[in-house]
Each structure stands twice: as structure tokens, then as C-alpha cells.
Image (cartoon, rainbow, N blue to C red; front, side, top):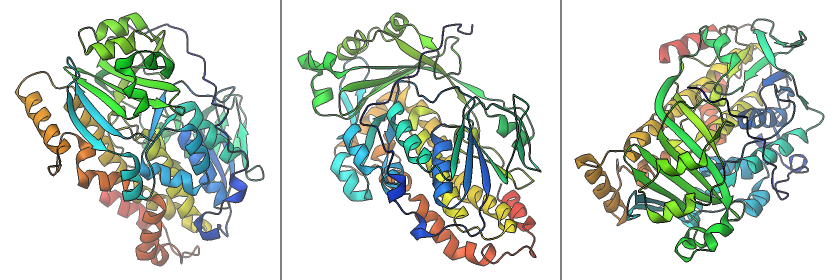
Length: 481
């Protein structure tokens, strides 16, 4: 039965989460800007929409962000910022702000659900920063969103934000967005960054979305770290910050500190019992505690501090065949085309990477005939990576929630082996798998575009001047799919 609970109010960003004057001091793409400037409508002012708006504005384009909500805000949850994301944020000028408000976790640790016995560990902290040239951070979602907002809206000459501007339909050929008010917003390109319930996605793929229930729902809560510091057995979770996960039959829990260790974030995955697919629906804290009765006493003590919780039904969506409308004037980004389950903590990272790739590609635009091939280049660069991360996330759902028995014993044994220094290839702790970690965290969105452009783009797209058709790009994308 669907919940009729009232929506949770937005959480204010921390006072230190500010970046109003940063954009004017940063230079992207070696100072390169598109010689042919577009007016781009970005539908959605979430993390992905802001990232795309910022990157494309820095590439020389004029942006109108169309946002349904009457005000900008975010819910009270945490976000994991792995090096593949933090390197972009630092490049965009947010390094100093992140150091003030985010937390650098020492590592990732898995524990057994009943006893709290340590099953697995992978070191992060300075080790990851040294290996990948960028740190791993834990950050409050409202703070992260505010930093991207400040970064983007400061580009006043190029970015316009319109609130209460719900897009009810689009004309992919013009292109144009029709608002609920009846107003038509004309543009040169539409970017659908309107989330998991995307209106633009249906226009691109030509059919209704059919999400598949995962069987899971998630409780989300943030409490003051002071509650943990008042109990000696819990102090280490704050003093030595790391991501700690408890793994159990059909359930698991992920915890970590945010806001310079002042707050403690929790995500509790459990069998769905009729919740709704919403980041803002309230759940019952008492029901949450009963769902984890019998678990590690330390975890139950932490849950006793939770006054209220959000509850979110987890739905899965398989990779789309394409992200680009046949008109070549509409494209999808972030959760609108590759929504991520939370088990790999890469939803924000993939959305920001999308925006960075679009910005870099479109900094090279010199003629309208290049728009469609650049969109297909974006799809070619991004769709395989995001599909792989989606699959990796689904795998963790299975790994983390094994029923007690032979498979669980084997999982625990293999996690311990990787923790004690044995090679972690295909280890159930995917963060201890060196190959997977390099592939995920070593990725640099700008470097990927630069290498692709040198290998193919300059020759195949850079020389288009209106006399060469861009249809072969669509055919290549279809062949790849």
C-alpha cells in the first residue's frame, strides 16, 4: 500500500558550503570555448542538471535551467564522492570548499550483522589520494548541491534558472519545451536531466518507462555525531571516520560521517513493504528499529538515536538502447538515462561525469552540423561505462544480502583474504578488487574526451561544416547497441 505520509522539508546547506565566486576564477578545456554558441535548455536543477549547465556554460554556451520546484533544496542524506568525481570538482574550483565541509574516510569496512565481527576492509584516505590524484570524500547531499548551485548560478551572463517551470512536453524537432503554463521555451538543444521519473526520457525512447522492483526499500537518516561520542563503544566510528557496513540476510546497513564529522549518515536496506519511489517520503523510526532487531548491539544503539527517517522504494531500470532522440536535438543525462541503485555509491559521480563529458565535447562546437555527432559521441563515451556501473551496483545487492549459509560463509572468507593482503580479483568486496577500483576511480572524464577526440573526433567531427551528413553517427550508435 502506498504511503500517504507528508513530504519531508528540504534541509538547509551548511554555512561553509559556499562557492559563489569560484566560477569566475577557473578555466576549463585549456580556455577553449565553442565558436558556435548554442542556447541549451537543461530540464532539471538536480546534481546532474547543474553539472551539465556549469560545464556547458564554461564551454561558451547559453543555458536556461527549467526546474519544476518552487524553491531549490535537497533532502538530508549523504553522498559518497569517489576520486573519479572529486577530481572534476577540484578542477572546477571546489577543492577548498570540500576540505572544509566534507569528510575523508580512512577506508571501507564490512561487519557481520549479528556480532559486528569485521569481515572486510579496504584502505582509502591518503592512499587513494596518492594513487588516483584525488581524494575520497563523504558529503551531505544538501551541501554538495549547494556548491554546484553556487558554481553554476554565478555564471550570470550565461545561465538563467527558472523555478516553477514544469516541462509538460517537448517538440524534439524545433526543439522547444512546453511548460505547464502553456509557455513555449525555444532553444537549440534540450538536455533531459529530470531524474528517475523523467518526462524527457519517454520522448527520447518513444515508450513509457517500466521500472522493475528490486524488492528493497531504504531507510535514510542523519543524526548528530555527538550522540555517538557520548558512548565509548561508538566513539571510534566518529574519531576514525570510515564507511562501515553491516551485512545480513536480506538486509544491510551503510554508515559514515558528513559535515566535518559533526553528523552521522545512515542508509538501511530492507525488504520493501509497500513504500513509494520518493526521496522525500517519511518512514517510521520505530518500524526501522524493529526491522533490525537482533542485529549488532552497537548498531541497535545507534538506531535508538534516530528520531525520524526517510523511506525510499528502490526500483531498477535497465540500460536504454539510446540516449539521443533521432532529431539530434534532445539528449538524456544522469538518472534520466542511467539511474543508479545505491549499492555502489556512484549515482552522483556518473551524473557529474556526464555533464563534464558534454561540456568538453561541446567546447569544440564550430558548426550546427556537429551537434548530432557530438551527442552520439557523448553516448558512445558514456553509455557503456554507466551500464557497467549499474551492473556492478546490482551485484552488490546480491553480495551484501546473502542468507546465512554456504554462500555467505564463502563470501566472508574471501573478504577476509582480501583484507589480509591477498589479491582481490573478483573479490566480493568490490572496493578491494584492484582492477575494478582502477577502472572506476581512475577514470577522468576530461581525459577520456581528449583521448577520444585525438583518436577519432578531430577527424570525424572536427571537420564537419554542413556539407557532410551526420547520419553515419546514428548508424554507428545503432550498430554498437
